[in-house]
Structure formats: structure tokens, C-alpha cells
Length: 459
Image (tube, rainbow, N blue to C red; front, top):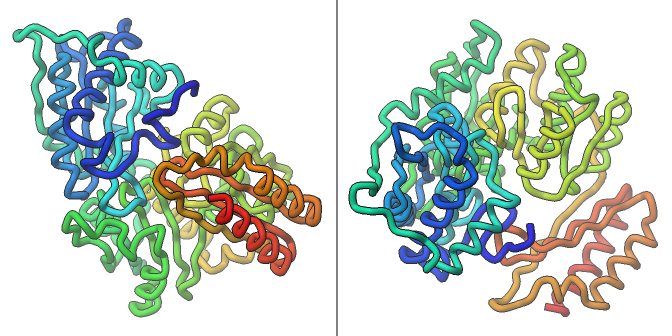
């Protein structure tokens, strides 16, 4: 993208009621997005004579304010707003397609704390907005005088979609083999006090599982707080305490999945992708001759994939990069180590609930325990440090500094083919992320410490 003034790797994100996510700016964002999408979708048949946007949200207190401001902006440029209420991000993507909307919007900051919020946008095909859309939207945001006002008789309206939850539940259930149920399975589900707090436990209960709920009491402030996919220790403890067969952890908008086995050990996205790749290959259902992952994916996983005669395609961090590579290369399985898992036979974005159902179906058909999956490969020691940036810090200058680049080259030279270094700016938080991976844990820790210290000094 030529311009990323407002959009990061996963939409627009920032402090709620801060410089960007404040009511006046949110109205402009909605107006700009609505106008750009209408122009680019001009050949599509209009929904009931007006362009349409579906809007979902997670459980943050600020979601009410942002929803109202976006609603005002979209209706002021003639859009009909279909309000979904609290619902997972992948449900918004699915309903954008199902309802033939011109645009989908999810109000969420995903795994961030409640103070932050954000906006994810989807095309009519349920694909995250990027490329020319983003550049044109940002230009209009900065030039609000170019946004025309519609006449009073063309102002849009807002309507609540009463059956949104039911539509999504049936959608994810139909991804399972006909008649499959999970009776006699005890599962702990951690919903991170987020968007899936009602819907996820209901889905697994309807499919016969005995469900233990964690992180299902949102209060507007506790989303992702010591729970969910970014804090799997809470889930691990609950699995052992309740003697469950497995645990499922989602994040605030339920587009991530992290699992815990019956022993309380954590399985990340890499291991889930590897497991499903092996399973789908054995069934002749893996498309493209490989899988798509990101630069964060562990080398142990890459070697496992390659030993099966498959390709591992790496992309930058961000599930929209993964989805794009999958779409262009004809792959049907991909995702991120962090738990964004895309099953393109069913969905266009990461879907934690759908991914969990696919894993449970695989385990049932193989009559396997979750802990059996840990035998597939041995991950290389890998660790990441997040270094927070003070306000106003230019991350690019820090990363390009002679000292930081020198420390990276030193580590890469010392480890050679037996290690990797990845230093990057987060696209969702004011952080520089330092990741080092090596066959030797001692080497990994040594170089991680040296590079991180250098970055801190540069900051």
C-alpha cells in the first residue's frame, strides 16, 4: 500500500476516543469508505435501491460510540446499515457475502486490551479491504471537503439483523461431515470475554459436547484480560482442573484459535496447521500441494511440511496476506502461528470457531487425543520480545539504524542456516517485535538478548 496513515496490517486501530477513533473522525472514515466502495462497486446491483453495509462489533465499551458514529457516517452518504451486534469477525465476513452487502465492518481491536478499538473492513466477497481501496479511503479522510452530502430523501437508515447469530451458527456447523457430533467430549472454551462469549459455547453444546465456560462474562473492560488466545495459561489451568479432553481459546473477535491438550500443554497455530495439512493430504483434500504461513512460522514446522513432499509458502505477518497468497496460489489451508487459521473451502478469513470444529472432526475420525499431535515434529526454540515505543518514535528510523542492523547481521552470520532473525514494527500496537529462532536454545537466547538490548538503546 502506498499510504498507511490510518490503516495498519489489520484495518484501523488505536485508542478509543483518541486522535483517530473519535466520533468526528469516525464519521469521516465511514463516509470515505462508503463513497470509495460505492464507486468501485458501481457495476453491482444495489441492495433495495441503496448500498448496504453490515456492522458487527466485539464487547468493548467503546463499541457503542464507534457503532453510532459509523452509522451516522454511512447513512449520511446514503447507505443502509445492517447492525449485527456482538459477533465474531469471521461472522461479519460471512454475512457480508450472504446478505450481498457492499461492505462489511467489524468494530474490534482483536487481541488488544479494552482501551483500544479498531475497524476491520470487508469487500462484498468477504475479503479484507486493502490495496487501492485503502489508499483512496485515506485520501478522502484527509480531504473531507470532497465528500458530497446526499439530499434528505437519500439519507440511509439502520436496521437490526435479528437472525445474524443463527445464520452464523448454521454456517459453521455445515462445515462438519453430515451427522457428526461430539457427545462424551468435555471441552473448556475460553472466549476472552469477547465477541464469541455467547455463540461459541452454544455451538459446541448443540453438537453434543459438555462445555466448561471461561471468559464469557464481558463487562466492557475485561476483553482479553488474562484470558483468551493471548493468555492460554488460564485455559490450560481450567482444562486440568476440570479433567477436560481439550481446551479452545479464542481472542477478542474470535478470529484466532489456540488449543490446549488434556495435559494442559499449549498447541499454537503452527501445530494446528501441520496437523490439518497431514490429515487433508491423507484424504486427498489438500489443494495447491502445500500450505501458506507467515515469516513467524517455526522452522520445525516447515521441515515437517517439506518432509511430506509439500510446499510451505511464507508471507508477511497478517492473515490478509495469507488469504491473498492462498487465493492466488490455489491453496485451501493456511494461517499464522498466532492462531489465525484459514480454511478457504469454507471461509475467507481466520475463524477460530470453524478451525476448532475442523480440528475436533479430525481428532474424532482419527480417534486421537490432542496430545498425540505434539509428536508430529519438534519445534525449534523460538522466542519474541516486544519493545514498546514511546509516543512519537519513528519505528522505521530505529529499525534502519546502523546499530540495530549491525546486531541483526551479527546474529545471522553467527547462526547461518541454523537460525533466523525477524525484527519488525507491529502493525497493530506501538511495538517493535524481535524474534529469534535457532536449533540451539542457548544461541537463540544469546542473540535475542543482544538484538533486543540494541533496539532498546536505539529507542
